[in-house]
Image 1: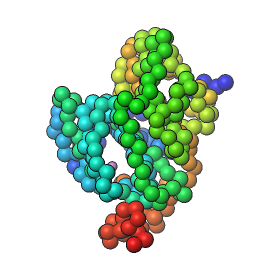
Image 2: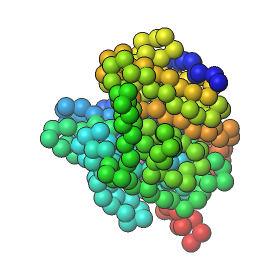
Image 3: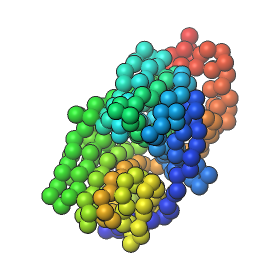
Image 4: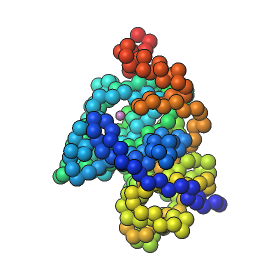
Amino acid sequence: MKIRSIEKIINPVGVTEGAGVKLIRSIASPELDHLDPFLLFDHFGSDNPDDYMPGFPMHPHRGIETVTYMLSGKVNHKDSLSNSGSITAGDVQWMTSGGGIMHEEMPEPVDGKMAGFQLWVNLPAKQKMSEPRYQEILSDLIPEVIDNNGIKVRVIAGVYQSVTGPVTDIQIKPSYLDVTISPDATFSFDLPGNHSAFAYVFEGEALIDNQKVGSPKMVIFSDGDQIQIKSGGSTRLLLISGEPINEPIARYGPFVMNTQEEIRKALMDLRSGTFVWGAQSK
Ligand code: CO
């Protein structure tokens, strides 16, 4: 069995997105364009509402999945399929844009707080123009594995110690774990050797591969069958993995396709009002 080592440590960079939301980004950053099949990773949250209240007004997506996981606060959303609702602390929304969706995501503080993550997951060519789909999982339905060695894992997707997460039927066979490690405890996780994997440390300090990793930082793992992370104090991190797609990537803002021609088509569809799924054939 091969324990995975650290391939790279990414320092998140500050960016302004949407209508003026300040956040920090680790994938789709100057240091890392993508980690197949992951296209973007953002960490949002601030004690100052001015940093997030402008939100993400109505905008398109095509060819990807956007995954929003909330730590605190609330995001109110609605979309071109007439879905609407809010996600709050501990909830996850796994949105498959497929061939085209328009949605808005507007943050709102709860008890003065707002924080969470957005991950973009690529879709293979054969699913890029598929029907959009939502999996919105409320916190209560996310299983928590607590072991007596001081490890707590919320299993959002994938399998940890025989407990399966509620997000299902995703092409890249993802694991998405929210992991809390008590001082001196060691978390270990088995995964397929060829899956891409990263840890995003957002509280405390982790010890990985004999290296100290503070927060917030992203660790990209090399290939191998098992990940081992020791706490360097009280540590909380996301552990995310998935099967690479190995196809060409053409990206332009909220569209990620295989070719430039498909990007041009997305822009044309947007201009002609035939962008959203189902409108193309009408
Ligand atoms: Co969006």
